[in-house]
Image (cartoon, rainbow, N blue to C red):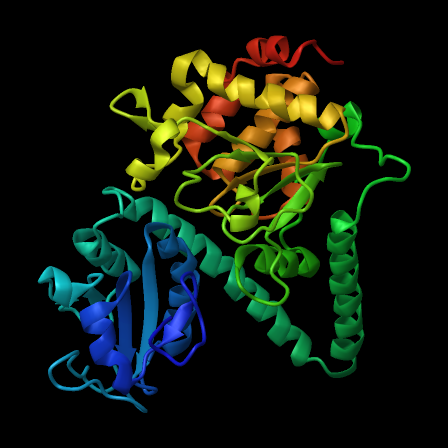
Length: 405
């Protein structure tokens, strides 16, 4: 249930209307961030985009995002106050506030930057880990830049008459091909096995051309969850998929490797009986608490998870991936967005499987990124240092059973 008709859900911006303000303020089942504004605000497009992108990020900590348009609605005086015309303001509502004796909070500054908004959320949210603001802001702005570039490309197309029509036809072809490719991954694989990449192809993979309009279109479909053309996962090599945990449905997987806290965010179909799941370590005070992950919902997989116990849990996960793939089974490696921690697992597996030397890890990264454009692990210096210099390739190959050429 919700407070805006029936549209939207956790992970999407919901519309808040005046008659439901009281129910939200007193009895929301989750923490809530409310953006209140009117249609005359000066930065409407800029701010709307960022809130849309922020909603699925905050869903990780069970925070629902609402938008209250004061040009059409007003909350009762005893709930949320008005915002000055032409501005945006933000409120944080604790879950089940009335029952728990809590009260909503207001960010004093109007039209705040999103680092202020994130600091405001971090201050009041119960489940959101501290020191996450810089990481979230970087992710938010990176996604916004991509979205703005795609929009600029679309505008360029619409402004060029006949050329626009021919380009649009080309885009239809690109989208159609992408949809066909996606649907083909859902079909049973009982015919001639598909051939994966050669070692030479991986060692010489060029960098992705992010100036390509087709690439930008695909990136948007991979970034934004909940839309008709959203792409929640991407196939990296035959039978090995990389993607988001929360909205990827079971596609006949034999194994799911969770590079995030699976107790907090994993699609129900991926919890089916008989489906093997490997949870990477969740480290609290130097101990792995993944066996009781539900009691540590505010903790997650991080770099320390990959380094834990001499990298043995990581290498055991790589070994299971290899065993399932060699028997023709399908594997899904996931994290919140399918672009960072889960990408590190896939890179580690491919580096061990193809004996990729350090000087060619960048090419391996290019290859993986060419299959899922939003992979951004290289932007995290610690993760990049791990896969290039600290990852124990020999141990991984030993646990996988044999070296491969």
